[in-house]
Length: 52
Image 1 (cartoon, rainbow, N blue to C red):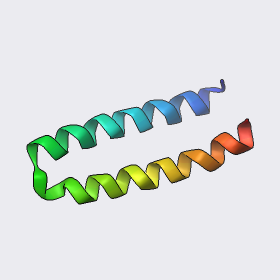
Image 2: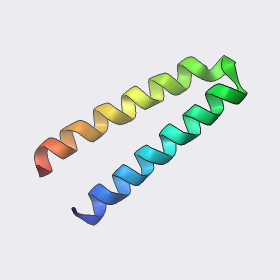
Image 3: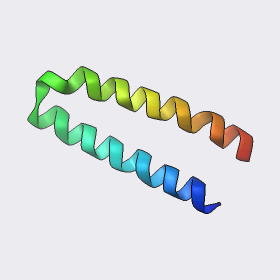
Image 4: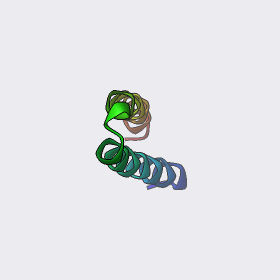
């Protein structure tokens, strides 16, 4: 695994944790955090396909 992939996976994991916490504490931003999660996942998939 390259350093870039590791950093990307770490950032994705941190964003997911942050959005989970935000959804619990602030229900009004639940949809925005879901959208961000989908965007982050869509950005991660093409990179994994190119590297894999």
